[in-house]
Image (cartoon, rainbow, N blue to C red; front, side, top):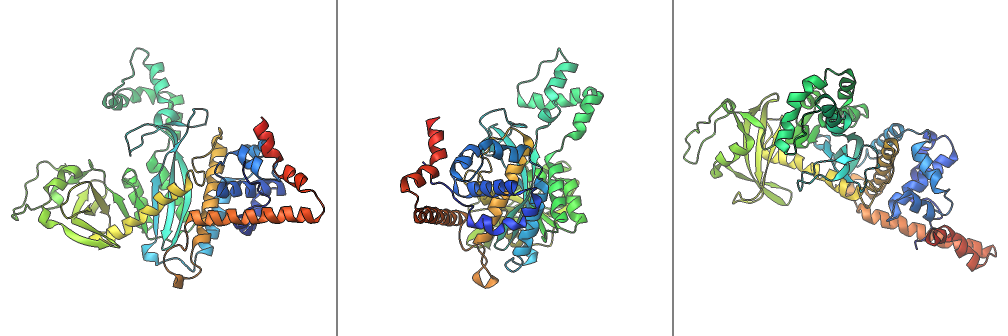
Length: 467
């Protein structure tokens, strides 16, 4: 049994007017506030549970229609959210030179295949392929201010086209390979014929790669006039198209380099421990083959915050990207264990500057941690893609309002949030308990019996238990 919610969370009520004109009527506004409250204070964030716990909420089907049928638009809500955050955080943002836009993606695991666009996606962390949605997001970081900007859903090419069914249609005698390498080579053999089919060609043109989504997120940030100087991206998004757009908008960039990414060997000179230049074979060398050749004596300790990194900087040329600054970073003086290879367009930046800025990528990971089960980023049971997009939009709203509550009121209070997202949620829950006590007290004052008051407050939950 959960405590009933007799009013929207105070943090929701305080900011509801910002979005009020985006909804057609008061019912939609109430659904909006009730759902945000459920995301903030309830452990179970399903539509059914939010309906049971909010005392004055309508039936679950009404809340469901709010997502699937009601004529409100997630883009308008998200645009309003970003604009209001930029306005409300003006006084506490850090230096603009350190402001960054981060591109990354995550997996929202699902337990069934009924949700639209759900598919098997590669989990790079453990080499598994869970059933999930794969949203690509952009986040803004500037001093203590850290919030998500926009989201695009990534879909696999095979599911978007659908490629495998088309192969069987055009090549009925060809068996689908089961091994990864053979399956990777198959498109080169079959795609020329598939693309000659107008129906497949239309599906092919609708597909958007993660690079395309990253470009769309960067363009969205520029549309919102997000004031940042550096684009921070993961290894999957380091492509010529994205870098060219960043250059067009006069943005610097830092990325993690894929280990198998090729470097031009004639663009740099590498010496061994004796100072003798190494003779490298071929016009290119992969990053993972270059790192072992770097002499240990060339690494230098670089302090960043409370952590010391041992780094080897090198200016090289990347095919398609031009001359860049490469920084190999290890976490111990013995140069053992894993290492990271960072790359930036700013060849004049020292290793410390590049690593200091790259550390800003961590807030998007904490957003994923705080935004998933605690805030419901991956806790949804919508089958419709439009409804899922609206859910993610409202998760962004709930997270952003909580983050705003955590920020210092002025720069003199420091460069870090005053409390965690979890602490902010607990404060909202305590405020709702207080509102519940006052609600019961007022009805007792009006002469209602305690038994009747409690029966009314827990009626919907008791009905759900009876079922």
